[in-house]
Length: 129
Image (tube, rainbow, N blue to C red):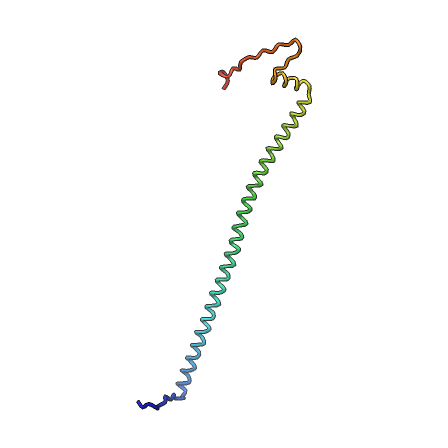
């Protein structure tokens, strides 16, 4: 091994074919790597989009459920208030009737007409269930 020697490659068909084969395999490896990166990027983007829309769907369903509960509660309150309003209208009509008003005043406040005597009897709460 002498110090000034240079290595020389043979330029024959076998060497050229092996060089071409190495270049092809290197190119194919690079193409596979690029395709793999693209595939991973596409899958990741698809996953993120699916995750985003899934969150939107779940969030919308929760909001819809809460709104439906509020609507149901509001309808119940409205029905109760309508019933109360109807009862109050009926009571107003009855209070405009002179006979009913006299009856209420006598029962509640023990008011009597001239010459009338009111007897207050104890309630029979033992016999009632």
